[in-house]
Image (cartoon, rainbow, N blue to C red; front, side, top):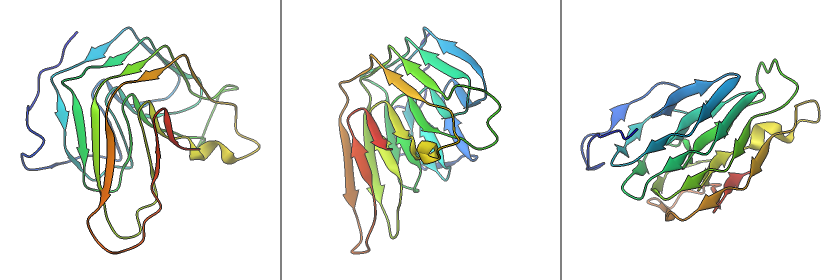
Length: 173
């Protein structure tokens, strides 16, 4: 399916909850597959994890064969971890034996991030932040057979230090 939303992220930013995704804000177990988002702009103000498909994925969650189209874009100004497919993974309160899996997904969307003082987050074409899986007790998470064709850009609008991790596939691990 195709979602049609605001075409200009220059419109007033919309407050979002903790996590925001066009298909699912949070995915705790289960599967999102064979979906496409295009012609949709996200301009969040707030939020921890923002993704075009899923905001935050927990253990036993699978996102496969999904696409963020070339006419979709995320313009973030509020310090979220941002990914073209998934904003971030989480080990918090995990209940499964396997971590989130992202397989066969393609991001063609643009991700434009304006950083601020003390930002510490990941920005990636497929997954923004996998850092929650640095714990040895957490289940293994995977990003397999994914492609990023989208533009990823970050700019510091202040002279304050920030700790942005940018990546074509995964921003922060």
